Length: 430
Ligand SMILES: *[C@@H]1O[C@H](CO)[C@@H](O)[C@H](O)[C@H]1NC(C)=O
Ligand SMILES: *[C@@H]1O[C@H](CO)[C@@H](O)[C@H](O)[C@H]1NC(C)=O
Image 1 (tube, rainbow, N blue to C red):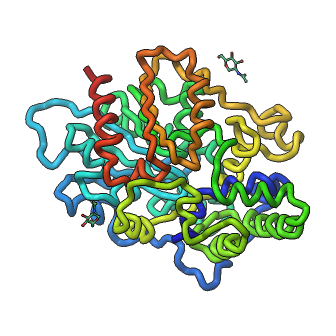
Image 2: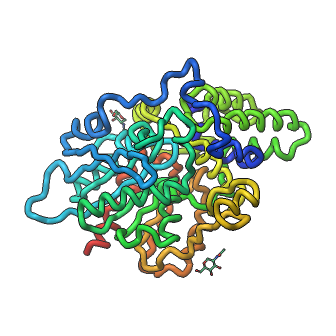
Image 3: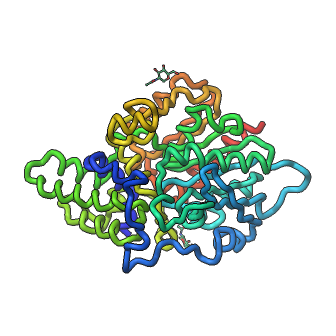
């Protein structure tokens, strides 16, 4: 469990070594299918016969449709729709669509681990919303492409820039096309960053009614996780010199893999050996990495571990590490000015200027006092970019005891957060 949870904070540690090796993840340099080379580990994500609807939704008495969306760059994404609550309201009322977007290293299943009375999609459905669940490219139900093979490196040549450019627009177009209505959006973690980046470029906003951002990440410089602290120590400490070299070597090995598979051997081995560091208590790495979640049910955590984590691209992890290190929200840095010029026509990667998010976009932001990934100081930086936002269009909620995972799995998340999200959306619809 510790090892798996460790993935969530890994990006923090990478910032210190990874730039040197960034070129390794370019398509023409990438080598070695992670799946093929894992040997012992065959366990990459064979989708269970049952999809999310069958395993987690229909069984609770909700309608649910499995749908497919193809992005402009050819990825075939799985989307679930829960069109109404268990007790369908009568009449021809058109239901307001809500799109729910998960974070990094998990998939849409992560929203369904608590019982219906406690999980966000079903609470929204029971409140009369038409609920749509996104599954990011690379996760087990979105591991398909019109031409590329997920066992080959080329399938994994993307970072969250492509989620901004392709995944989100494809799913927005689809939901908007099917419903003919502007969308309410809920994002958690990376699902907030990609939304903020999109909105800042003026994308999606014509199809968007409002957005609720839970455990928001954008700036990451203060991410205060065990791995981050370890890496920082290794970076400055003389006596840690050998460890630092070792650390960077491990990173190089990982970065050679195009698919970042948390269940694969290289990643697991790397994390396991990190536990040898003084001060990293892997017994409680969950708390050390996501912050001390106040309110998780251990049965739900077990369910989480059976279903997650999911693969992402190594390039995506590198991009996140760059965000930690550089303290700005910008596109992927190819690590050399000439490479950046090749991709962007500029020596540095273009920034996403969050101040450009339309000032009249209704936003609800909820963040936790114990969240090590979405540190309070970083949330303050994010809020600072909203200082010219219309005051009546921005609601901010602070939950002192909450950490990163409480927002998706907290037993009391309904009372703490989801009721507020429902009220916020209903308010926009009046
Ligand atoms: C935790 O989950 C189990 C299994 O779903 C359930 O029986 C139990 O009541 C839950 N506890 C709380 C506090 O929600
Ligand atoms: C971001 O945009 C705002 C206003 O649109 C501008 O004042 C600011 O200088 C921009 N920031 C950067 C870093 O370009």
